[in-house]
Image 1 (tube, rainbow, N blue to C red):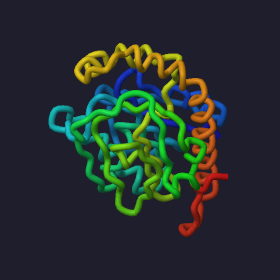
Image 2: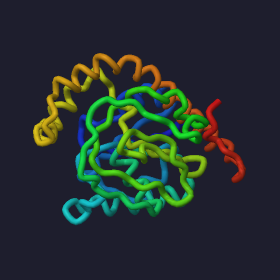
Image 3: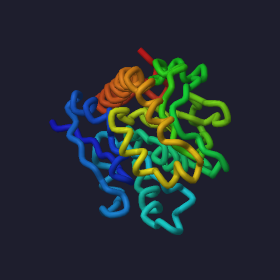
Image 4: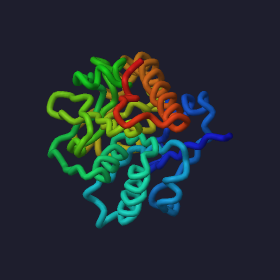
Length: 249
Protein backbone atom coordinates (compact mmCIF):
# COMPACT_ATOMS: atom_id res chain seq x y z
CA UNK A 1 0.00 0.00 0.00
CA UNK A 2 1.32 3.42 -0.97
CA UNK A 3 1.46 5.86 1.92
CA UNK A 4 0.70 9.45 1.04
CA UNK A 5 1.90 12.72 2.54
CA UNK A 6 0.42 16.08 1.59
CA UNK A 7 2.58 19.17 2.03
CA UNK A 8 0.72 22.49 1.99
CA UNK A 9 3.10 25.11 0.60
CA UNK A 10 2.58 28.89 0.72
CA UNK A 11 5.75 30.12 -1.02
CA UNK A 12 7.99 27.98 -3.26
CA UNK A 13 11.21 28.16 -1.24
CA UNK A 14 9.58 27.18 2.08
CA UNK A 15 9.20 23.53 1.11
CA UNK A 16 9.70 20.23 2.91
CA UNK A 17 13.46 20.69 2.89
CA UNK A 18 15.08 18.08 5.13
CA UNK A 19 11.74 16.35 5.70
CA UNK A 20 11.51 15.22 2.07
CA UNK A 21 14.23 12.57 2.37
CA UNK A 22 12.81 11.36 5.69
CA UNK A 23 9.36 10.85 4.18
CA UNK A 24 10.88 9.05 1.21
CA UNK A 25 12.84 6.74 3.51
CA UNK A 26 9.57 5.75 5.21
CA UNK A 27 7.90 5.01 1.88
CA UNK A 28 5.69 8.08 1.61
CA UNK A 29 4.67 9.51 -1.73
CA UNK A 30 4.66 13.30 -1.39
CA UNK A 31 2.28 15.70 -3.10
CA UNK A 32 2.44 19.48 -2.76
CA UNK A 33 -0.69 21.59 -2.56
CA UNK A 34 0.09 25.17 -3.55
CA UNK A 35 -2.06 27.16 -1.16
CA UNK A 36 -3.62 30.19 -2.80
CA UNK A 37 -3.63 28.66 -6.27
CA UNK A 38 -4.67 25.00 -5.91
CA UNK A 39 -8.22 24.13 -4.78
CA UNK A 40 -8.51 23.58 -1.02
CA UNK A 41 -11.15 21.10 0.12
CA UNK A 42 -11.69 19.19 3.37
CA UNK A 43 -11.45 15.95 1.39
CA UNK A 44 -8.02 16.83 0.02
CA UNK A 45 -6.68 17.41 3.52
CA UNK A 46 -8.39 14.40 5.08
CA UNK A 47 -7.26 11.69 2.70
CA UNK A 48 -3.45 11.51 2.99
CA UNK A 49 -1.88 9.57 5.83
CA UNK A 50 0.27 12.58 6.81
CA UNK A 51 -0.37 16.30 6.48
CA UNK A 52 2.45 18.84 6.80
CA UNK A 53 1.44 22.51 6.70
CA UNK A 54 4.46 24.65 5.87
CA UNK A 55 5.42 28.25 6.54
CA UNK A 56 4.83 31.49 4.69
CA UNK A 57 4.84 35.28 5.02
CA UNK A 58 1.08 35.68 5.58
CA UNK A 59 -0.69 35.15 8.89
CA UNK A 60 -3.88 33.92 10.48
CA UNK A 61 -4.97 37.53 10.88
CA UNK A 62 -4.74 38.08 7.11
CA UNK A 63 -7.84 36.07 6.19
CA UNK A 64 -9.69 39.17 4.93
CA UNK A 65 -6.87 39.96 2.50
CA UNK A 66 -6.06 36.32 1.64
CA UNK A 67 -9.41 34.46 1.68
CA UNK A 68 -7.85 31.08 0.84
CA UNK A 69 -6.67 30.98 4.45
CA UNK A 70 -10.28 30.53 5.61
CA UNK A 71 -10.66 27.44 3.44
CA UNK A 72 -7.31 26.16 4.65
CA UNK A 73 -8.29 26.62 8.30
CA UNK A 74 -11.57 24.78 7.73
CA UNK A 75 -9.82 21.90 5.98
CA UNK A 76 -7.21 21.64 8.76
CA UNK A 77 -9.96 21.65 11.39
CA UNK A 78 -11.71 18.78 9.65
CA UNK A 79 -8.54 16.71 9.63
CA UNK A 80 -7.86 17.45 13.30
CA UNK A 81 -11.37 16.36 14.25
CA UNK A 82 -10.64 13.06 12.50
CA UNK A 83 -7.46 12.59 14.57
CA UNK A 84 -5.20 12.30 11.53
CA UNK A 85 -1.43 12.92 11.97
CA UNK A 86 -0.61 16.55 11.27
CA UNK A 87 2.59 18.60 11.51
CA UNK A 88 2.44 22.40 11.38
CA UNK A 89 5.56 24.51 10.85
CA UNK A 90 5.65 28.28 11.54
CA UNK A 91 2.55 29.60 9.73
CA UNK A 92 1.42 25.98 9.58
CA UNK A 93 1.68 25.67 13.36
CA UNK A 94 -0.27 28.92 13.77
CA UNK A 95 -3.02 27.62 11.48
CA UNK A 96 -3.17 24.33 13.36
CA UNK A 97 -3.26 26.11 16.73
CA UNK A 98 -6.05 28.42 15.55
CA UNK A 99 -8.04 25.48 14.15
CA UNK A 100 -7.75 23.93 17.63
CA UNK A 101 -9.22 27.07 19.23
CA UNK A 102 -6.11 29.04 20.18
CA UNK A 103 -5.50 32.72 19.52
CA UNK A 104 -2.75 33.79 17.12
CA UNK A 105 -1.55 37.37 17.20
CA UNK A 106 1.25 39.70 16.17
CA UNK A 107 3.87 40.21 18.87
CA UNK A 108 5.19 43.56 17.64
CA UNK A 109 8.68 42.12 17.34
CA UNK A 110 10.48 39.62 15.16
CA UNK A 111 12.53 36.54 15.81
CA UNK A 112 14.65 35.92 12.74
CA UNK A 113 17.86 33.90 12.62
CA UNK A 114 19.35 30.89 14.37
CA UNK A 115 18.87 30.65 18.13
CA UNK A 116 18.73 27.82 20.70
CA UNK A 117 15.56 26.24 21.99
CA UNK A 118 14.84 25.50 25.62
CA UNK A 119 12.53 22.53 26.03
CA UNK A 120 9.95 22.26 28.77
CA UNK A 121 9.86 19.16 30.95
CA UNK A 122 7.23 17.74 28.62
CA UNK A 123 9.37 18.69 25.64
CA UNK A 124 12.34 16.76 27.01
CA UNK A 125 10.09 13.69 27.17
CA UNK A 126 8.81 14.21 23.63
CA UNK A 127 9.92 13.66 20.07
CA UNK A 128 11.73 17.02 20.33
CA UNK A 129 14.13 15.79 23.04
CA UNK A 130 17.29 15.94 20.84
CA UNK A 131 16.66 19.66 20.19
CA UNK A 132 17.17 20.90 23.76
CA UNK A 133 19.68 23.76 23.57
CA UNK A 134 20.21 23.37 19.82
CA UNK A 135 20.11 26.52 17.63
CA UNK A 136 17.24 26.29 15.13
CA UNK A 137 16.06 28.68 12.42
CA UNK A 138 13.43 31.19 13.58
CA UNK A 139 11.54 33.41 11.16
CA UNK A 140 8.36 34.90 12.59
CA UNK A 141 6.68 37.84 14.24
CA UNK A 142 3.33 36.27 15.12
CA UNK A 143 2.83 33.79 17.94
CA UNK A 144 0.22 31.17 18.76
CA UNK A 145 -1.24 30.53 22.18
CA UNK A 146 -1.17 26.91 23.32
CA UNK A 147 -4.46 25.28 22.25
CA UNK A 148 -6.86 23.98 24.92
CA UNK A 149 -5.71 20.56 26.08
CA UNK A 150 -2.39 20.78 24.23
CA UNK A 151 1.04 20.57 25.83
CA UNK A 152 3.70 23.28 25.53
CA UNK A 153 7.04 21.76 24.50
CA UNK A 154 9.60 24.54 23.87
CA UNK A 155 10.43 28.22 24.34
CA UNK A 156 12.98 30.91 23.56
CA UNK A 157 13.60 34.21 25.38
CA UNK A 158 10.61 36.43 24.67
CA UNK A 159 8.72 33.72 22.79
CA UNK A 160 7.43 31.16 25.31
CA UNK A 161 5.28 29.24 22.80
CA UNK A 162 7.64 27.57 20.35
CA UNK A 163 6.07 24.11 20.08
CA UNK A 164 3.07 22.11 21.21
CA UNK A 165 1.58 18.66 20.89
CA UNK A 166 -2.13 17.98 20.87
CA UNK A 167 -3.14 14.40 21.39
CA UNK A 168 -1.22 11.55 19.84
CA UNK A 169 -0.95 12.83 16.30
CA UNK A 170 -0.59 16.62 16.16
CA UNK A 171 2.64 18.60 16.46
CA UNK A 172 3.09 22.35 15.99
CA UNK A 173 6.52 23.96 15.59
CA UNK A 174 6.96 27.74 15.47
CA UNK A 175 10.55 27.33 14.24
CA UNK A 176 11.82 25.89 10.95
CA UNK A 177 13.15 22.44 11.73
CA UNK A 178 12.81 21.48 8.07
CA UNK A 179 14.96 24.28 6.62
CA UNK A 180 18.00 23.08 4.65
CA UNK A 181 20.97 25.31 5.51
CA UNK A 182 22.54 24.62 2.10
CA UNK A 183 19.58 26.42 0.51
CA UNK A 184 19.40 29.39 2.90
CA UNK A 185 20.11 31.80 0.04
CA UNK A 186 16.61 31.25 -1.36
CA UNK A 187 15.20 32.35 2.02
CA UNK A 188 17.40 35.44 2.10
CA UNK A 189 16.30 36.46 -1.38
CA UNK A 190 12.64 35.56 -0.88
CA UNK A 191 12.43 37.50 2.39
CA UNK A 192 14.78 40.34 1.36
CA UNK A 193 12.13 43.02 1.93
CA UNK A 194 11.31 41.70 5.42
CA UNK A 195 14.98 41.55 6.37
CA UNK A 196 15.57 45.10 5.18
CA UNK A 197 12.51 46.34 7.06
CA UNK A 198 13.71 44.67 10.25
CA UNK A 199 17.25 45.99 9.85
CA UNK A 200 18.70 42.47 9.68
CA UNK A 201 21.87 41.96 7.65
CA UNK A 202 21.47 38.79 5.55
CA UNK A 203 25.19 38.14 5.99
CA UNK A 204 24.53 37.38 9.66
CA UNK A 205 21.98 34.67 8.87
CA UNK A 206 24.20 33.31 6.11
CA UNK A 207 27.05 32.96 8.60
CA UNK A 208 24.76 31.38 11.20
CA UNK A 209 23.63 28.81 8.64
CA UNK A 210 27.24 27.82 8.01
CA UNK A 211 27.96 27.63 11.75
CA UNK A 212 24.84 25.84 12.98
CA UNK A 213 23.29 24.27 9.90
CA UNK A 214 25.19 20.98 9.62
CA UNK A 215 24.69 19.94 13.24
CA UNK A 216 21.06 21.06 13.17
CA UNK A 217 20.42 19.04 10.02
CA UNK A 218 21.55 15.86 11.75
CA UNK A 219 19.33 16.51 14.77
CA UNK A 220 16.39 17.62 12.62
CA UNK A 221 16.49 14.41 10.61
CA UNK A 222 16.42 12.39 13.83
CA UNK A 223 13.43 14.30 15.17
CA UNK A 224 11.52 14.12 11.89
CA UNK A 225 12.33 10.43 11.54
CA UNK A 226 10.82 9.69 14.95
CA UNK A 227 7.73 11.82 14.21
CA UNK A 228 7.11 10.05 10.90
CA UNK A 229 7.75 6.61 12.41
CA UNK A 230 5.43 7.23 15.35
CA UNK A 231 2.76 8.73 13.12
CA UNK A 232 2.93 5.69 10.85
CA UNK A 233 2.64 3.38 13.85
CA UNK A 234 -0.39 5.30 15.08
CA UNK A 235 -2.07 4.94 11.69
CA UNK A 236 -1.47 1.21 11.70
CA UNK A 237 -2.22 0.66 15.38
CA UNK A 238 -4.35 3.44 16.90
CA UNK A 239 -3.16 4.10 20.45
CA UNK A 240 -5.42 3.88 23.51
CA UNK A 241 -6.61 7.28 24.61
CA UNK A 242 -4.72 7.11 27.91
CA UNK A 243 -1.32 6.47 26.31
CA UNK A 244 1.32 8.99 25.26
CA UNK A 245 2.68 7.94 21.84
CA UNK A 246 4.84 11.08 21.65
CA UNK A 247 7.07 9.81 24.44
CA UNK A 248 10.62 9.90 23.16
CA UNK A 249 12.11 6.40 22.78
